[in-house]
Image (cartoon, rainbow, N blue to C red; front, side):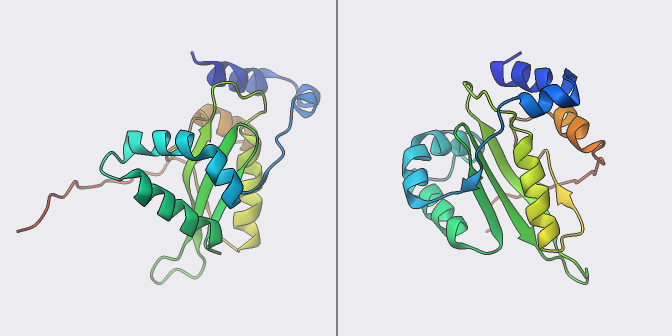
Length: 164
């Protein structure tokens, strides 16, 4: 078990009073200076899943997310999170989706607290749901323990090759 998982499991097993006493992250919106500070770490993490993307493409995309009203891009000292608001056809309300929640191995804060802030952001924008556990370092059991439950949704995808 990694250090992040051990810290997270300590949070899950702890009493509510102990949870409040644990280090709470100072969550703030990502700035250009923050992105510069965290660039190497974020690019490394994102290229694990998106090997075809160049560092320049990743940085350009992250810069765009910083200025978009449809994205929630925040950080604390050792955690970085990005979510997006998505409008589905014929649905009256948007949904919010986690894009990623990355936790540095030396994190002392309870990273699940970012999900509370993410849920508040989504609710403020009248989202009907928040899709989580997409690309995260926070175990699903931890998210479920924090919110009471997490509904399982099944999404099937087809990998498509280049046409032609």
